[in-house]
Image (cartoon, rainbow, N blue to C red; front, side, top):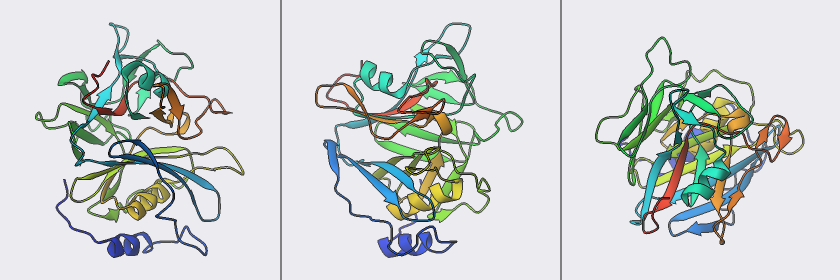
Length: 289
């Protein structure tokens, strides 16, 4: 974790340091928020700029003692490491308060229950589900996010240190030590999923930016995604799998899954792609199913 202390004014100054995305009014940092559970808030914001970007944001107060972070997926047989599952199904099946799609995988499938391989490291509940990448096989999965209950680390390595119980590979790193990573070169706008944390390690953000939906939300580049996270207060952030995989889902009052963003698998708004693994936030007083 970064030990860099950063004030709100420095966060906003860092966000404004590059080519501006906003025209006129600044990004609204204080919208109405919906409480999903103790310590977990949700909001949706429109990033002002040349094209519409609908940003769905879950903010987690990691000082909340009852919360825990988990990497989850259905272990497969010899045909693959995981069985495909949508984020809504993950929330329904496990009882997570909220979940976001995880790391890269192959192949892309349209149905649940299909064999998938995660691209790079994945660990759940202390068990290795997918081995680490090598430099030759990593592709964009060149970093990891690691969890041990409420502790989180984002590291430019191919696997998590042994003391972390859960983690997965993704990438690229978007923000490091409070700065947008300068070698983030992807300028094409797509749906994006990302995870960020603050310098003290007591705030976590799960965000999605909807895309491929002209007039509603056209997606973001890596740099734009990074600047949004810095504006929220993140000093470390990692890009997750995006495109048709992008999905953010919460448990509603009756325990059913509720989409917080508008996924677009196969060009159909609202349709979710079945993926390999997920990052879930759980209330530990409620057993993980």
